[in-house]
Image (cartoon, rainbow, N blue to C red; front, side, top):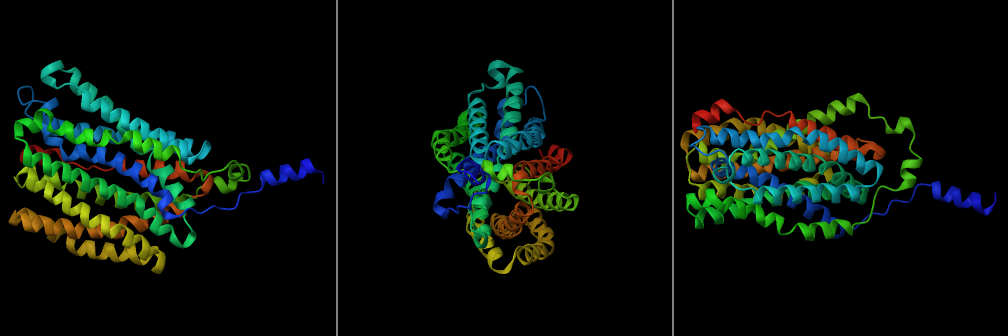
Length: 394
């Protein structure tokens, strides 16, 4: 065989996996945290955003419309999962992560700079919806490429720990948003929160967008040309049983995750707690989950994904209803904080192993697009808010 033939054979041969130390992949987690900080902050400040874009002088359903605007972001998440996720399979994980992050930063900055209804009228809520659509598109394309990157960068016996960065940084975003909300609600009056306080919370996220872009652009690539060339059509096919399993796991995990995130608004609107006390629950959730996420991932590496998930589900079934009954009936700050802490830990022990299991089950050649699409469909399919209940509470 001549030298040219040897060179072609070497180029076609799949490259040996280059596993990265944990500190090298933190950039993925930082970018993930910033994106989810901005997305989650919207739900935390739903009441204030409703007052800004849907004033009571124009409608008596400000919170309802604000929550509907939040939900609009879920409509474009499947589209973002398909487009950016497939882009991550075709071009690379890193370009896809940079694209989703840049779109998220642009949409949040646009939201912050949008004048209120009192200033520009109906154009204000229209712009709000447009930016929410872009934000949902960007977030829908974030999970697939970033989780695929973490799985591919991790040694096989540490995948749970590496992928735990995905949820750990999301929960760190919850903590950061809770701290920002707690500080703002403690320092500002209700009128100041309505007029500009909620915008300050978003600006905290946009201020670090350049740092996140720089960190992501300097990551190595885990999806190489050789991996795509040597992949057959059979290897790219995702079995239906895997799709069903992934969809069920992701629906369960995201239902629980978003229900937990909503406790802040629930505490303000339904339990009639002050904004500062309600954001205290978010701080508790963030602290507990940030600690529990890596523990859950490490434990799933040691004893297996299934035992960790099943144990969390059993305890959750036993405690979920009593926890919410206690919050609703007693309306005590200590009860809300205690219930939030317990649910946050259970969330970590359910969602982290579920995400690792799902990602490992998908073929590498279509891992980014498949995971992003199924995750986004699961999230978009949730009926997270009950408009009748919130209308009555408000």
